Image 1: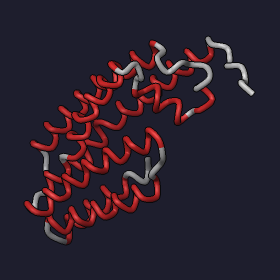
Image 2 (image 1 turned 180 degrees about the vertical axis):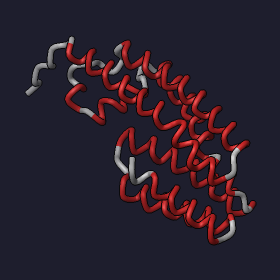
Image 3 (image 1 turned 180 degrees about the horizontal axis):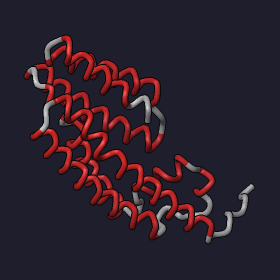
Image 4 (image 1 turned 120 degrees about the vertical axis):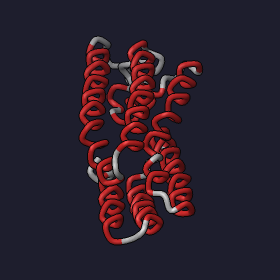
Length: 186
């Protein structure tokens, strides 16, 4: 989570000393380095790659148009684009939250089936949250200066993200504790 602040810090610092295109380029290159060192395999890796693709597209538009806001729009764009992933995962009976949770905490994989109601419910909640999160970010991006947006969007939105992460973890843990561990197949 702290590494995700590095591209923002580089971008914000560069906006003070250079033009928009170079600030976007610096922020994007820093994002690329962070992505390289934090990339993963499997589902979380694919989701990270998806987010990085959005950042890349936003950076290209930001650099070519000289628009810091186009680059910063990658946040709300990602929020809105993740909604169909959550919804689609429900139709496939493989809720996205379940896949993510099982990769982050493999110990629950044997306790909570991937199609458990808790994962379906949390996938719906996260889809709704991403819609609200993206909408608030769009409003902030349209009304604040670039520097104000970078600071206030984090101050205003991160606490709610942290609360939802904690509530999700608590619900999954509660569900896992009610189930016996899976028998070892070997």
